[in-house]
Length: 125
Image (cartoon, rainbow, N blue to C red):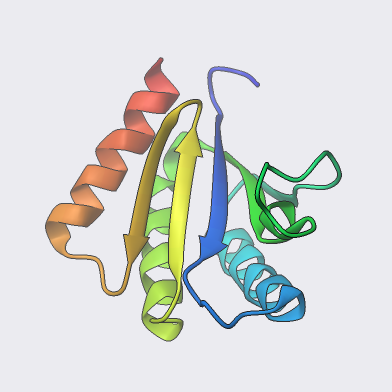
């Protein structure tokens, strides 16, 4: 990745009764929202071994890798907010390296600011 882009792993979770098909549908909707919000690229993760203790490949089924232009930060946060509002029983985990942020429900202004600063810090490092 170049210094103009930031790679973020985004994983959908939270619906205890969600099967693989439901997770896939939720992830597809989120992917579409992120593309509409101006993400440079949004790719599904594929393959690899499932983490210890997981069933099948649900983690990669519900995970997206986002390449984000610096100017798309505001759009990304708005897209996450909108998606979480529509899918209130879900959570989203953003991961960059070993750092993770998990959010659920409606994001407060403070939470939006924390996410924005976290994203900007990752871009600058």
